[in-house]
Length: 111
Image (cartoon, rainbow, N blue to C red; front, side, top):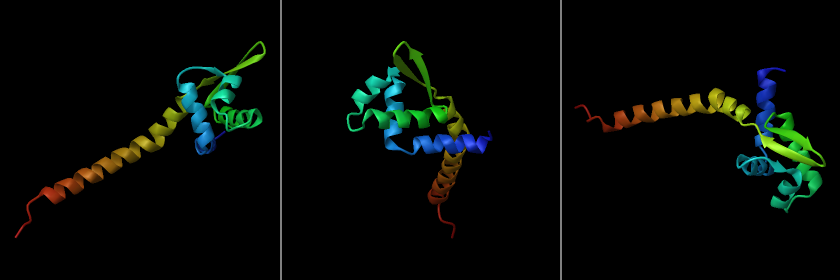
């Protein structure tokens, strides 16, 4: 699978509010699917499972079976890779441009 395909899966996974909520819940530590369902009462269990499937496909969640329970673990490495590839360089570019603008504004006008 190409890097572009992996990035597309990650952006798709992050594009839905419920999936971002699930990731936020998993930041504190692994949770069972039942616990995630309890934390998201506006969603039924089937919908939570579908969202978890998208997150797993993107590599953001790793599921572990323990008996009858399914424990979901956050894998933040793909998000870090997105940050390194996209967010960091664009933030650096924006900072540089703002710095140049500030210097231009603060320089005394030449007569």
